[in-house]
Length: 310
Image (cartoon, rainbow, N blue to C red; front, side, top):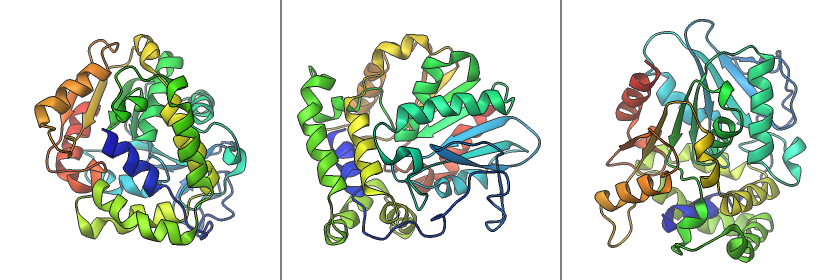
């Protein structure tokens, strides 16, 4: 688990390359005209939403730290039947301008604006799926607005990432100095630092070498301060006390930790223990995959999602 967190910190070290295709991305319904898709008619400085499909269950897909909604494409290609997909693109990540995420917290305000999005769009009983930091956002949404989430899937994330540092007695307060150091290092990193670190980080998070280009590109075009602030928030946010508020049927999908002495069975115990307060949750381990499960094992992952939605 510690390796996962440190890899996440390294991958988020951005280059000086600023926003590219979404550099001046508007947030309204016409925003996707040049991208071949439709954007929801929803005003937010925290994220914009690409909408696909007009029939079937609503599925909200939230990517992780520095990621673009592109990471979900292999899943989208394998979904059974029609769906109304809502692909969240967090401002400051993968080429989107920082806007309201330029300072302060990221996950918590994104979760609050997602609650507003669900209400204003009249979305009933959505299936909410979040990967990594997106899983944290999905947990916040389900715990703080349980009436708005029909089903919840958390992909390779735990309620308190501070546990990844190996201290069972860690608290947000005890981890604050380390979180500050990681945030400052990310925010002040140079293009050279990123070039030196990102390759190894991606290698640890995407096993399939040919599929690493996307996450690398997303990270390289993410805002350094937004990425640093978001990582800081993840380290010091403990959602375990809020798990009891989640009422939606929940599945946690994860991979076995690949560090010395760790076995798949121990990984199972760690994940189940991390979610002790979430009654009735289902746990699914996907083997032969790294952090980006949807890239390394697209068929297995899509099968789990299809079964969960149905």
